[in-house]
Length: 106
Image (cartoon, rainbow, N blue to C red; front, side, top):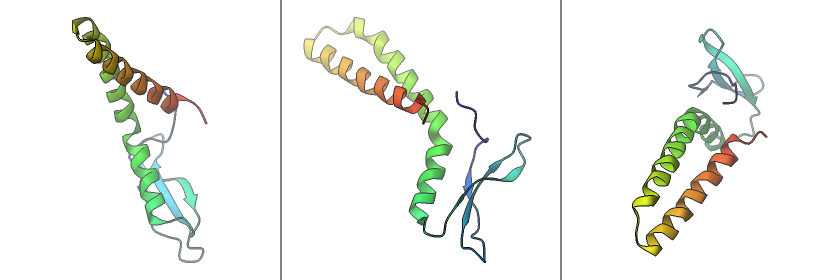
């Protein structure tokens, strides 16, 4: 797993002078208020919320995808219908591609 500032992250208050908005996390000792990033005033609230939601759910989503892939692989042997097998393999491929993308470094 990639090392990063501990979650949860949250959106801070805009700087009164510059309008920049911090994204806050916790430092290595898990103290809140650690500035993870500073977004300029042009960054929309929607973008800020998207970033924070994505970061905060990343690890649980990735874990769920890995568990789903494992379960589907385990169930393949129980399937008898050709369409079900083909469909399940397609779902597994989609999940595994998402896992690869999630684990790829920028």
